[in-house]
Length: 64
Image (cartoon, rainbow, N blue to C red; front, top):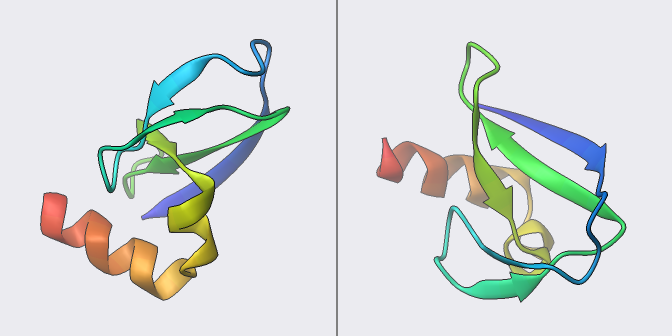
């Protein structure tokens, strides 16, 4: 699993968190969770980011 941070062209647009499924308003930057090949799997909300990398990795593995 990899995390990518990219600028967001559409701040305040609503998106669904890949890990928890909650809707959230995106900020100026977006965090994207990717598989080992670097393919985007979806965006991650700030609540999930706040739980830390190890928690994110565990949740991502459960979804696979």
